[in-house]
Length: 322
Length: 194
Image (cartoon, rainbow over all chains, first blue to last red; front, side, top):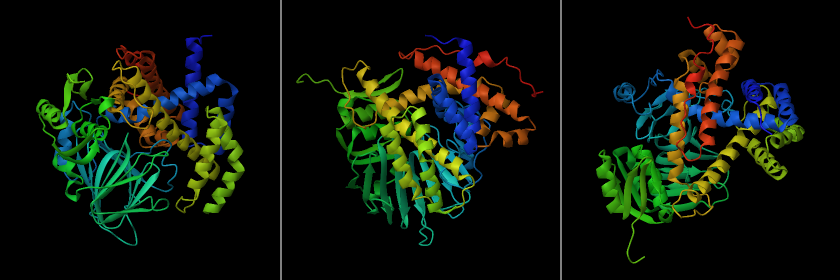
């Protein structure tokens, strides 16, 4: 049973209308929406399609609208502006943002977002003097009405926070919260889950749940779901080292190294799954010359690095003995 | 609205919210599971007045469903990527990420961005206000001196273009889909741009 194009378009139009309506809808709007969805499986399917479109449309529209203003309090406005005029690469956007249907879980907030394109970094200085450095391909959500709030939506950020016992700085990452206790710390959220590493002071991870306290030189990774939280030691000097164009690891799986590299360089990097668990200890300097960088990497990680249509692929070296 | 008040309302609405999850395609078990998560989450919310608690609870259910779908989609995509990738290597079906995801996501994003760029500037501006700034249809209409239905038309057009671009991507798994849809909608009437 195939659907005619007219019927498909009509369903899509209705799904979009409903989607716009519930974004700030009343409970009645929602009830009517639920009734519509339940009336015909094709309705639910049409709405799924729009929801999927909505998901990808967020980043796409940010990139498609080029005249977005830069945040006034950016540390490096000149550099930032050059990113814009430079064109070509995904532009760096700083703009007000509401995720999904508004902050939803946060009332009375005035959110704004700072995002970086692939391979670009920037530093935000808050009015309090606290600093947040954003690695490439990352976005953080801030609240003008709550200077002690930040939400790392994706990617990696290093926080330099002045501790105030009466108003702890709280970083939200997915479902989790990280509360500072006077601190320089680094937070990463990507496909690997969530990682926190502390350079100075300490933080409390998930204060209402596991309540793990991390001090300087400690790190934690939380894969999310039912995965176990892992704690490990980290060289405090290496925390947030990406800000200086370095990535430092102690026995880190290559799956993690590859994701970090992709973020820092803006290159697409495919990793042979056979290598995912191999461990790496050492420091990678992000050479702006990509060919040289990947040639070095191939030595350093003992892998083959090849460039294809879809970016770089890191694979196990072929060995006669195998 | 006190926290316990919101929890009370939640308990009364739980069947209706569960129904929403079921019509969105969740199994009964998964829906119950999500409702349980939501109940716990309600206990951790910061205090603060909530204007329309019933709409708020629907929205919160919707957002939690989205979170859950995202993580499920990521896992499924990873499994498919490596089993169909011709590398001869099957990935384990654990929750470990693949840098391949990053790459695919970037390609898809580029195609959708191109589609949106082909739209009139006014349409893009309105869509950005709706999708990124979180402005309501009414607020956008007020800001730009348009009717609500004119605003809806622009938003419709943007979603339509994105959905078409996505459909083109999803139809062609081999990755060499030629996408040329964005321009088709250019000629649509634009009833207020001078």
